[in-house]
Amino acid sequence: MKKIFLVVICAFIFFLGGSSCYSYPKTEINASRRKKENTYNYAAINDDIDNEVFELFVKLHKNYKKNNNEVVFSYEKFTDPFALSFLFDFWVYSGDNIVRKIKRTYNYAASDGKSIILNDIILIDVYWPLLQNEMKKRGININTNDLKFFKYIVNKDEIVFYYPLDYEANYLTVTLANNGVTYQDTADTEVNGERRAALTFDDGPSSATKDLVDLLNKYQIKATFFLLGERVKYYPDEVGYIYQSGHEIGNHSYSHPDFSKITLSEAEKEIADTQEAVYKLISSYPKLFRFPYGNYNISALNMIDLPVVLWDCDSEDWRYRNSQIVYNNVLSSLSAQTVILFHDFAGYHKTAIEAVINYLDSQGYRFVTVSEMFAFHSEENVVFGKIYY
Ligand code: ZN
Image (cartoon, rainbow, N blue to C red; front, side, top):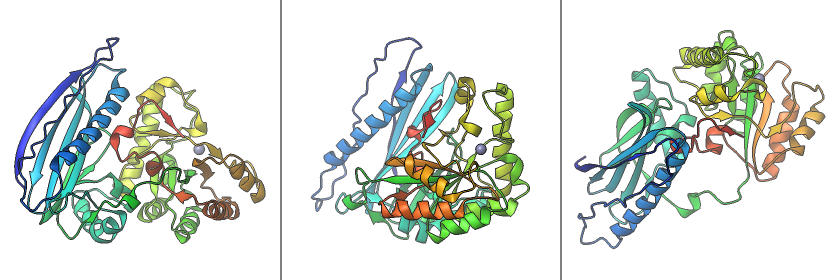
């Protein structure tokens, strides 16, 4: 891959209490390389990128304006007979510290300018086993849910993958042979008004976890498990089973305290210990956090460097033995983009969960993980100090 040029476009400084005024220079993307047979228009591609980069920048500005932050970005352009690609790097500084690094990639076919994407099918069938293997060599585990977090630059022979290890986004780079790509199809883009449900299971792992995972796997549903750090050592196989089945793992604290009643340093320890306990078992860190009981205080919320997710639909499955009541609880508070709270415990409501799955399916809901629901794989969508539900 030949680096054509690298340029730091601009640095923006936002002052506390200062004006929200900022400027955005249009990127001048070099479009000098044109093949004679090309009928597509590089200028149009440049405009598309300009718009996306502008939107990304506006989001970053909004997310970080409360701090005295500086946002810098640069980009590299790559060309070869197969593709035209752009790699953008954004850095968010707080003083001298980089608090976020964000990569964004764009790939276009040299033949017709179509957007090159790796869809879920090719990612899972072709690249996942290879990526998993390469990551393992670096001591990192990935499951199919993690695939969404990869960015990539494509050329004729190779694909360079970038994987954010954490929310400061220290990236690992893996280069694989180009074993095929797919192209953006308008039918792939998200249909407006599509209904989606994220099933979430709190307080596990438990003796019921494997059964629960089998139930989800039977319906080919990927769900999100918010685990308790102090429980994972008792159910190590269950944690591995959740993860290897492609479900998402979140942090639900170590000992399930009420965060509105503990100190900030206790809160910090609850979260950090759980991150480590899970990592020790599966070599992958939880990417989300959920407060026990949904209780929090603002300082704890602002301290957490993971996206914080609660729920909008409560099954109250821990409260009732009667599955019909649990089922009715869910149906009475569903929304079009719904995060449903269940629990992973010995008395879990298999019948109610299965009935809910069938009902949602009949209503045209698509099942997603929490990260998919809020598009957390695009890091600029993660707003710290915000509660997602
Ligand atoms: Zn809980």
